[in-house]
Length: 420
Image 1 (tube, helix red, strand yellow):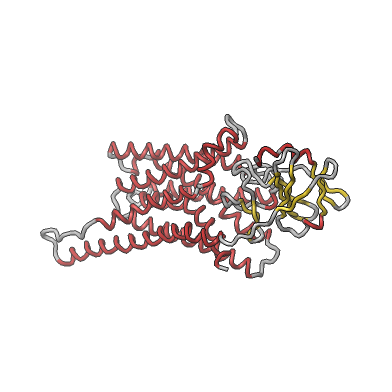
Image 2: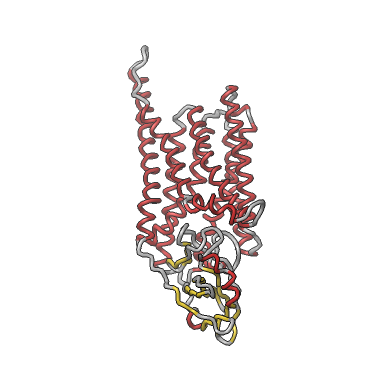
């Protein structure tokens, strides 16, 4: 039961954290602008990001016309442009001593940053509960309840941590907030650049997967380290606040005025503690919680199959239960080629290699009726298995005839080099 909660809480939290943590620092920075103009730009970006993500989610669910990789690539490019612009404008502001309300370009850039972060990360947050309802056989069930609790807890923990960031960071000087924001944006930009390179490699734009996998493969497989880096930078905020010594009583102040100063100091300590607790909880959930959630995963054994003539034939009754089935075929030169089959709906099957373009032949397993990549723990949308893209299994040619699934032996022979 706890595993099911964590398995849905962790990806929700990790996805939202990359967006909400920088946004929280941005809002804390906006609190330093007495005119409120900078804050209005940020809230415009938040509004456009949420509405845009909701619109794309609606189009994607209603028409299937949205190509996820193209959408993500465009949004990430937009985000990088906004983030680089914002860093440049804020640096210029600090050097020139210009207040935020008098430099509208910084506000415009912050609007783009906020919109891009929510367009990218907000899409999954909106789609997750909808797809969970759509693809769950029994909505009124303990399994569904545990998934929803995990989803809501992940969102709640991230939101509360973001609120603590806003309160704590607003107690710092403008220069220190900008310094922490700059460090956070650099981490976010590095992750975004990696995903853009990954998309370009998969679509063979200027480079190929074969060329880039040795370079970006380790980074793609350990993207959670970007979250750890973001949390580490954020943890600097409460550390800075806690290191500020108790103020001495200024000469000339009466006791009431000094008590007000001490109250402000206690306020700093409370928000510092709340923020440190939130960041540490997120880190523990992402590490210890992830290890617990992933243990005791049952891997479906690969069933050996042989070709009859030039075809591999699999009786449909063996793969009609809606669960993941793994098969292995021994090629003419000795390589073991693995492939998976899962019934999606009606007469539709998802058939592909037990490998993908990004993570290689590490394969897939089934967890809570979901197909998951063994290496990067990405959950596949069952409806897209059999189609190219992302971490999906590499599609495999097949046909159904007389109650059997037929896979050409030649199609398997062509893919044998992937499993060397």
